[in-house]
Amino acid sequence: MMHKTPLKTSPARGSSLTWLRNAFVVCGLLASSQLLAEEPHPATLPHPEVAPAIEKIETVIEKGPFEANWSSLEGYKIPQWYQDAKFGIFIHWGPYAVPAYGSEWYPRQMYIDTKRRGDNFFQHHVETYGPQKTFGYKDFIPEFKAEKFDAEEWAKLFKDSGARYVIPVAEHHDGFPMYDCSFTRWNAVEMGPKRDVVGELSKAVRKEGMKFGVSSHRAFNWVYYVRNKDFDNADPQYADLYGRPLPHLFEEDAADYQKNFPPQDEQFKDDWLARCCELVDKYQPDVFWFDFGITPGLREATYDENPFAGHLQQFAAYYYNSTAKDEEGLGVLNYKWGAFPEKAAVLDKERSKMAEIRKPFWQTDTAISSSSWGYTKDQKYKTADRLVDDLIDIVSKNGCLLLNVGPRADGTIPEKDQEILRGIGSWLAINGEAIYETTYWKTFGEGPTSVSTGHVSESKDKPFVAEDIRFTTNGDALYVIGLKWPENNKITVKTLAENSELYTDEIGSVSLLGSDGALEWKRDGDGLNVQLPKSAPLPYAYVLKVTKK
Image (cartoon, rainbow, N blue to C red; front, top):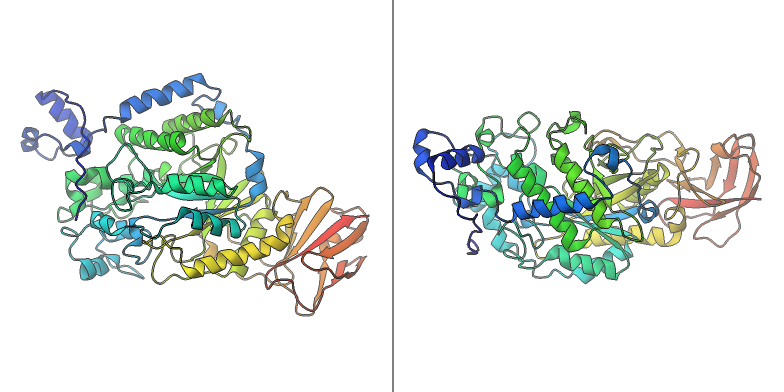
């Protein structure tokens, strides 16, 4: 079932015993002295195009203006379009959509034979497809045909959702690039769809007037696949998909990446850098998003002690230098935890929020589904109402929302995803002026409901109530956003009381976006008291526009 594209091999390097021994050590294959008689498989060696790519990268960095050090990179300035956009779409799509089981981590979990809560990926795989030796993750790729994929249809849907930027996953942890990658045969142009998915989307998204970005999750490929001699991923000939079968991946605790996550070696990091910079060259992304694999120390790693730091500095300098001449500003680089100094890039929080206003600007990434980022047959969907509330809360605290969808293997976006996206778009069509181009106010809001702030903690969030209010502002307008319509059709905004130190001006008008009728209101020591209509313009949050006299 495998695609028959020939392996891309390294140039001839001589065959001395010394060179062989060094090659084996680099590849982690020196298990015994008997192996010295064997030549390492080409798939385990550095790709021949990586070295010249690194030379080119160094040349671009040398030309500046940014240098590959934190001091220089902290001179970064977030472009205004991104701070104004507020809402983007994330897309997790790859061969993992074929099994459509459990989550997009199926490629990893199908090789982990341990008891676990929830879905048992390993058992499901054996029962459905057979042993991992004879049917591995690679064997899903020919079934990943994307025969109904239409980039223009996707772009129109995202435009209708009110999104201002779109970020497809260019390469997930699985090691299968969804673009025309020069450094591996395992990519969507040579296998599976046999189409440049990222390239097609970049054109369609920009045609609709939205910004385009890419994400790279490749850094975690280093420890993603747990190995066993009885698995196909232990075979060196597939190292250019699964990664080299290194010793730490065969350890008993290999599945626990929080404990078994040795720093990536130079061969891996150089390959990572070459792939990332190629994405910059080929698609000129306005945003470049990184997942957590760039910090082997995970949450404990800080940018100044991170063993990945040198390559992150090189990439950031390359990306910023490559976009420095853009009229709308530098590219946006997203990171998690402590991978970058906060002035050098934009912090991203996964499935969580901020408790207060954060300066500088930041981003939350979350998904329409609470159970998976990629498509599965049993998605647990959020509501458009909840997602609109999330967007409002995030924007009021100086952030933006990147919301994920997971298409099916055939390239169609599930109907429920479409319904939710259009629901958000309907709300933004009426209330967008309270979101786009706004800034945070003196306080983010008022009300009793707090939000989760820890990594992947949104499941702890409770629904907002009628007393929960958020603020945004643009010019002389203050937007008062109620997260739930009150049952008595009345609201008192305590922050805007007559004696408020936050709003000292006299109020001239109060109007409800989406409604033509005049509102009855008064301001006293308790707050701004507003009599609302009998029903909301939409069954989600509502917006009061307050202007000065």
